[in-house]
Image (cartoon, rainbow over all chains, first blue to last red; front, top):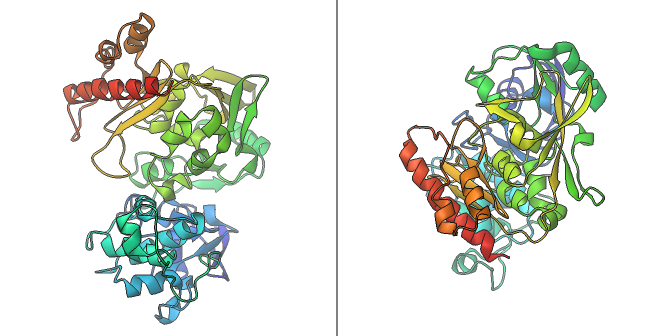
Length: 182
Length: 274
């Protein structure tokens, strides 16, 4: 079946089998390798991408389901294609060391982009709940949670002391809500 | 993991979907959010020859209050995330968004649908037991028209329901709850996991998750409450007539104990809200 999927703002098209998973379309057909396949059972979230702005696990979506929709992968975030941390979420992961081996990172970042987009008033509890679908075996999540709070313009130290963040928010440079995931 | 090959169609309207389902019948499976069906197909436990994708039919996605009937009508294609954020549900049937919030994780809630989880009929799923406790009705549509089935009569066994192969779940109707107390007690070992056992309470109705081959009502507990017995006495009967599964997470005896404890907690929470 022919599919037309906009990936990171660029039109892509291919003739695919209906059983092809979106994760394989992104990795094998389009050739973008940031989207990782970890568990392949919808548990780990390493394959998380945005589908029409919504975080989804691309190992549990068929390419044909994404036909005529738009997908954003980690490569689609500002600066990521050149390896530079310019998007506020990647910048915050960089600054707060929100990664270790890095395998889960693209999925974490895409889940975080969606989380920040959907909730204007994040606190630590909401960030932990919001990352429930993304598993990291390396870091114990501490720096990842800090990074998401920073990207959301929250002070992670204040936020981690109290559920309601207080004090002056630290905003990563260049961030404004509404840009994330665009 | 890649499913066995199948043919795929994404009809543009509900009528087209039903016509195609009538044509393909037992060869076809209905694909909505896909978060039950695609994993089953990936591990080759299911191998439909044809998938009818209704996941993008906007006419199946709505939550409306039917004042005349005293019910909330929910389109079968309504996603879990939309149940969680619905102001109508929060006001009229608050158990439902509270349970929906415990399903999977944000990515799964963004894709999974209420009709899909009811149709899939996994006895470990959260929302079927909630709809049981809420005394909901499943509306099916097929080539012979529409029919309504009380959810208590909908399930026939593990992954099986009274839905005919040429029928689609199109709507779920739930009576308004008024000021009935409610609670959902879900026991899992890991975040975002399936319940080992869970208990949904709305008023004096009790739905059980993972205590048999289908979602169940705790009928002995409900009868005891009707008879005016205490919460502790009623909760002790929660596993009466159930056949809880044995797996790596627990024995039937362990699940029986969990059902009793969780039912007591849920009833106490629900009573406390009145």
